[in-house]
Length: 268
Image (tube, rainbow, N blue to C red):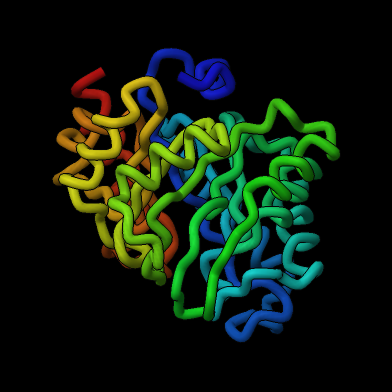
């Protein structure tokens, strides 16, 4: 198992909650009237609710920057760094970052903010809503090392949302190959889009072939499924289920967040 994740989380199966930033400057849904202060305040409220609920870590992401890009505008990465910097004194738990869908920008953001981990699509070839998708894990890992962040944990999503893998191997075989060739700190198994759960059979198959690698459920984990999911997975990443009415684009509901972690603690 990854020494980096062991150092961050110890022996606990981590539950990582998403802080979905509002749409960033330059993206179609950006709130120009609210500006940077609206981004900071929205993230601050969600962060506080998640920390108070007892999550093991949070991850800052630009989920609202639809339609997504493979090479994000420099302003997107800079703005995310600004927001995280404004909140730095309030972050009490480990945090990660994810700049959709740009591995090098995610790594740059982690280096600038001191994030402990990054989530991205690093491997594979996909037909996606954004067009042909071919990330480059070798380039991303070398960039991480050039920035002096060999300690940065890389979480590989091997079943990309909004996309179909052009690789005809099973998700378990693709995950096993990614571990052999790219040395991820964790492998993530996802559903088809944000908020939709991964198939349990896929999660089980990936964990079966990777018993010594962290395997996380990446999307669609709900209050009703989290305890069963953690019987298979080594951790989960959750966003939509914690929001008001369980809707991805809403703010975090403090009560839903507390209820979620109360269920997790029943098995700890």
